[in-house]
Length: 123
Image (cartoon, rainbow, N blue to C red; front, side):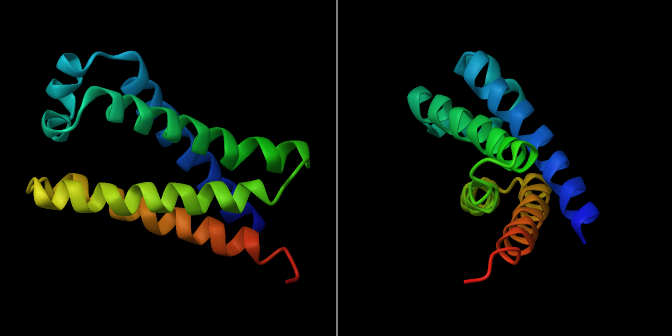
């Protein structure tokens, strides 16, 4: 199970890092070409979302790799799941069903990581 969790963590971190850095680095006008949903969202909100995605990517990997504050890894997965739940709603409302399906898969993957990594703590 640990190997599966690591694979999911790495894949999620890559997706979140690429998506987040794209949102942070690109102006909203350029993002419209790739991400139609940004049309109705203020640019500071898009940048903040990108920053959250970058933080999620770091949180999914860094604590687990270093062994420092490892509880942050499942917490980052929960945060990623919350962001993806919102993304599913945004894509579904915009009738972007492939985007909604992709974000739903990421949501499930983040929940699996959260469940698997929280399971390593005896509450």
